[in-house]
Image 1 (cartoon, one colour):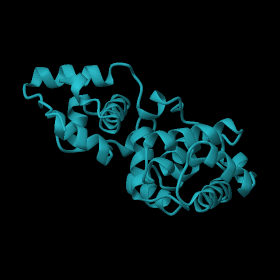
Image 2: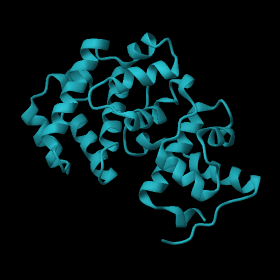
Image 3: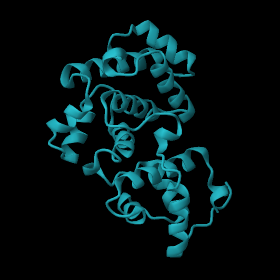
Image 4: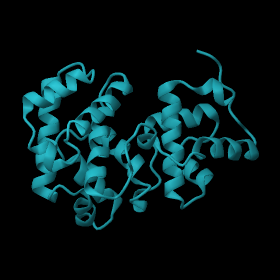
Length: 221
């Protein structure tokens, strides 16, 4: 693996942060998923996060989430009405591997549960938790197919909208941050991103996750 030179001076760190966060898009938006505080967008982000949390090539996860959306299942209500066999077909055609039948079951259960508990709107989950980050995490991980890693991935994106959860950085973003000399925690990255600027932090951690997944270190050093 090529050696990556970590930045050390404060000015170099600020310059690198500006470069990483400069295009104003987080991970999901880089791959065509809008990050807006509406039911459809939030559910698509959650679906993408569930797929990204699985083992395997992240590109297959992105392709799978996009395929579900493009099949017309762009909300919890619409995915909840889909047939299991159709979900399996769409996921397989998008390159999903492993137990696709179980994945299709999980996604169907997830959609139906979001509809039943929150009328298809994850903003209701946030309201039920009274905007408390620990409560939001607890309610999210209670959903079918959503584990702690999927919650981190979802909140990495949602912190641009749900400011109370910031700072959030998933393990891939933190791996890149350590290798590039930008810090070892979400708090370190928040300080570099401007403290309370949760939107800019979401852009930064999303860019770092992408660097780690795509192994794009060489172009940054």
